[in-house]
Image 1 (spheres, rainbow, N blue to C red):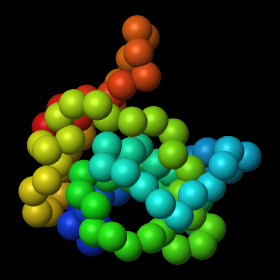
Image 2 (image 1 turned 90 degrees about the vertical axis):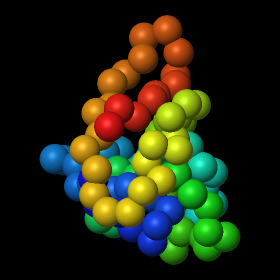
Image 3 (image 1 turned 120 degrees about the vertical axis):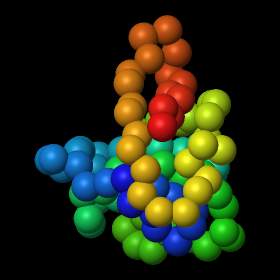
Image 4 (image 1 turned 120 degrees about the horizontal axis):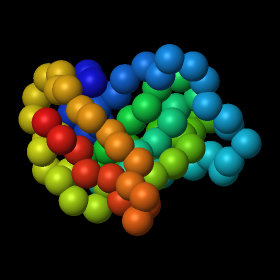
Length: 93
């Protein structure tokens, strides 16, 4: 995943996701979000006070631990697995 604005790690998804869910221009550290115009998945690891431009993002999940591992410059390799016993995801670098 590449680094965008030193606040989020991003990667292009192989196909678009549904955009029927609520869009927001705000985000929190730990949010896992989909950005429809670019077809990107974003993992937010730092808040810079900026808002996401229109049409916003669709928050699809939340990291509850390990977010600090993403707070490094440049690209990283991230594995995301769906948790069966909770909605939490933890990045593995």
